[in-house]
Image (tube, rainbow, N blue to C red; front, side):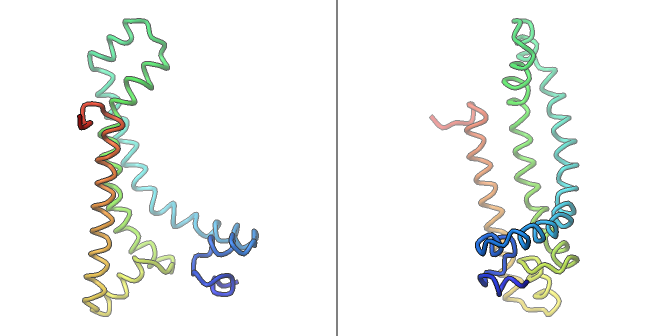
Amino acid sequence: MTPNSLTGRGLYTVDSLLAGQMATFSNALGHLVLPSCVLALFTVGLLTRFSRSSVLDIIRLDYVNAAKAKGLPARTVVFKYIFRGALVPIITVVGLAFGSLLSGAVLTETVFAWNGLGQYAYRGATTLDLPVIMGVGLVIGIVYILVNFIVDLIYGFVDPRVRVR
């Protein structure tokens, strides 16, 4: 079943849900697993290593030792002190990793023959269509700037020292 025969949006998962065809929806989800894993594996490895090192740095700080010395439950120390302190650098890496996900989409969409912005950029680059290349670069740049702006807003919720008074 093609997406145009459902509702014409070209999004298999959305079109099949709107048409009420659950078999097509589950088939479309099954076809999303491998491209999603390809895009996520590098980022998950990066975030895991960075999260570990960030948590190990926070565990050694004086305020964590003071919280333990007060006799606070281990769960409170971990979630309120350690994770909250380690979250700011992790959020930064998540925002920066978003750029690699955007660039990885070009390769992933080309290999798996999925139509999207990456496939459009690839076709524009191989045919030397300069307006397409500039347009895709502009869209990716705007999205990257918006993601970094959202990351900066999240800092205010996570770290009270960053809040504007």
